Image (cartoon, rainbow, N blue to C red):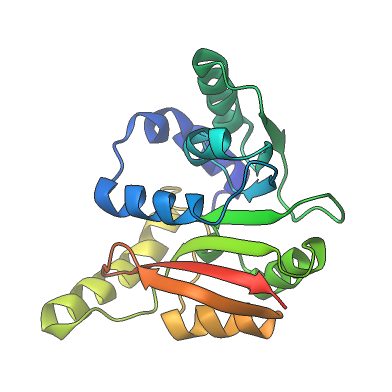
Length: 214
């Protein structure tokens, strides 16, 4: 299987040009995220990709540090920031949660199903945040079967296709888990979930979760 950084570097140009698969769901979760942000917040986004979410939310906060494993993705993100004249977002190469930093909010979108150590990352995020700090995420739950026969078949076909695509270098590492598995992992790391929902509903569902450090 191709290593993750190489996969995303190769994918970056096509990824940047691809339309958002469900713009209504994306805009809805952006607006929900905005409702938890303040003008003084310092935000960390993990797995920022080509930077779209960070750049959309930049006017609502003091600063965003956006990290990604792929230099190719980050190059596109920096170009987009320059073109838009946005200066309060810093794009950095990174594959892990920082050991320290002054952050009020940590975000991660379309990321945690791509990591083998999701539970460890959640614990690290908790350690990084102050009490009451927000962890906001949106994660594909590939282990959640769709409703009805059609939904169940679609879910099965996706899970069967992934190993084949990985063998030919067309997919990165992907982990399957249910919505309940994901929420249990977040609360188990020491967070209280204060908002959740599937946007889109799938299959597979993309679970949007706002959690607060307790």
